[in-house]
Amino acid sequence: MITVIYLARFAEELGLTEEQLELSFQDSEELLAYLRQRGEPWKQTLAQNKVYKIAVNNVIQHSNTPLKDGDSVALLPPVTGG
Image 1: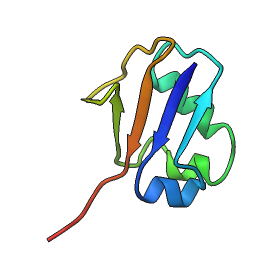
Image 2 (image 1 turned 45 degrees about the vertical axis):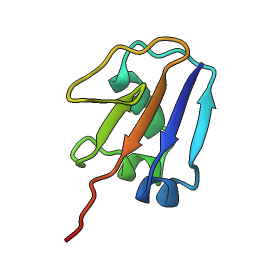
Image 3 (image 1 turned 135 degrees about the horizontal axis):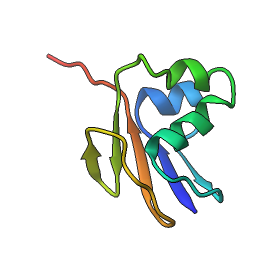
Image 4 (image 1 turned 180 degrees about the vertical axis):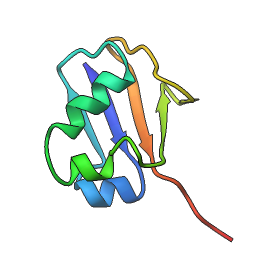
């Protein structure tokens, strides 16, 4: 099982703050492809051309990352501030 956490704007756009997925995923790209296939708003919010970060077990990842049962994956939209 993988726990997916949606932060900030993603929680608002997708209507979830967290979910547990019983499926197994080899890596973060496979997880994102699964989420995108849910249709809108998933496809648009998590589009490949969008800028966002992924944290696996509280560590920001900069590329595709292997996943294993029990991992926590947080999706972080870009933040602006001044």
